[in-house]
Length: 196
Image (cartoon, rainbow, N blue to C red; front, side):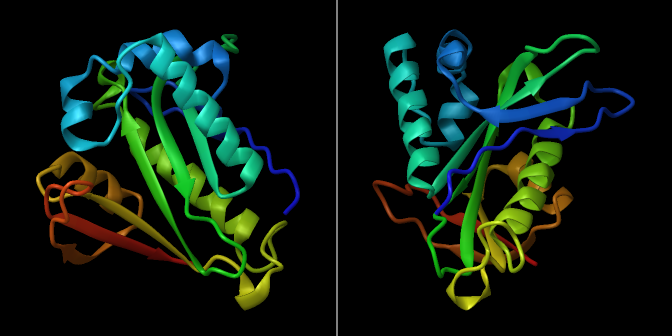
């Protein structure tokens, strides 16, 4: 697989700033460590960042996913006009990308300070479009056995109603309720699907 890089954008809304999505980098360590204090995030995800050392390790793992070409994690930043850096608003990831496979998974979370402003649906839509363009039939990396990426899955705990709304707003239809499988998945989950 060729080295893949990406910088994605999502337009502003009447009540929210535009978004820039880019691979995580070491400069994100302090903001990411701050997200580890969010009880809501920990309740609904496997996010386990307790301090800056954990954040640095998490970012190194994210960089390795890009290098290996199987997990593409994006920092989601809210940017103001003329502000190139932006503030961390969340995370979105395309994972389980394997040559010849027609299915991959999208995951996401939103930082507490950015919830309620449409960050997650806009970020998920941007990564969804990028995933199909990059790995789908006719995409840069889509010329693999089986015609490339055809289906994206999105999973969340059944009690996470906000994630369910994000999935639906992003065009992912509820396909099934998956039983809990502790310890990795201690709660039942919703499986949402979007087909190319």
